[in-house]
Length: 339
Ligand code: PHE
Image 1 (cartoon, protein in one colour):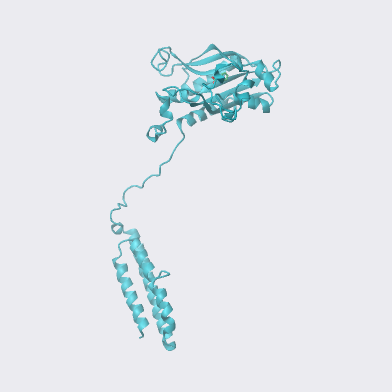
Image 2 (cartoon, rainbow, N blue to C red):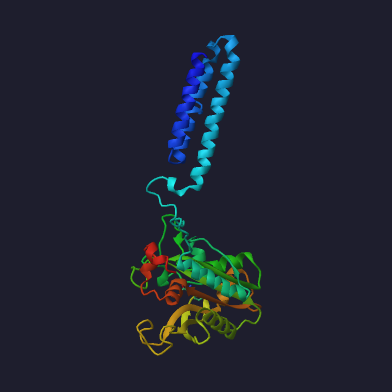
């Protein structure tokens, strides 16, 4: 028996002892690395084979192979045993505890409400559209028949960029963009973010979300608008919700209305949410002004239509009983994950 065979046998003995004492899979892996791994003892021993006398090579080779095989076998057996034996799991880990669930996010309540609005109007045949948040003055004001001296155009109310563009102050410019590129009939909704220079408080922010609606066809009337808004209110807040339209002014609709829900908190009796009036303002709306049709090249003698713009935050707050708008913008997951 030569020296190499002795070394092999000794290594096998050691390795088997260590396998016997191993407590977990990591221990076994370390043994595998130490003996059979690329820089382990067995590859090292195999390199010494060339110094063995030719007549002893066969025997040495056999010792080498059997040794390596028995270590591998011992590792495999021990691995299987550890896998089924919980008492040998690493200390400090209780494998009987339930696993940790990965945290799954969900959509923000504002996005949820926007999607719900799109779905309700979708059932009435309205197609969702988008427009840019960075708008030009023409689409945000001029094409919407808003005179040059209208207060909403003030730098105190609208964000102007150095290049003369603005952050859109309403989703109404999407009406223009759609009519510029589509021939009537048109039936679209456009949800999105708008920007105004308001001082943030419980009901105002510097940006908020609206959903714009536009319907253009032959012989569209205010009654059509009212029925659609009534349907929308009931879909969102149940069959008992009443709506009312109040005369108002917008440059791009004539006649114009503001549209209220009966208070969904007190049912119209009067409470702090509706400031004791029994009604909550939800949207501006009206019949598309003929001047707007002329801007986009529609013939106002032939086509008529209505438009509306709803505030999404307001709806999300009413739906989820959120008293302060700023809670929706703090991005505190402890708050948001409730919805
Ligand atoms: N754009 C108006 C606003 O932001 C709302 C509106 C939309 C009014 C469509 C009439 C028609 O106040």
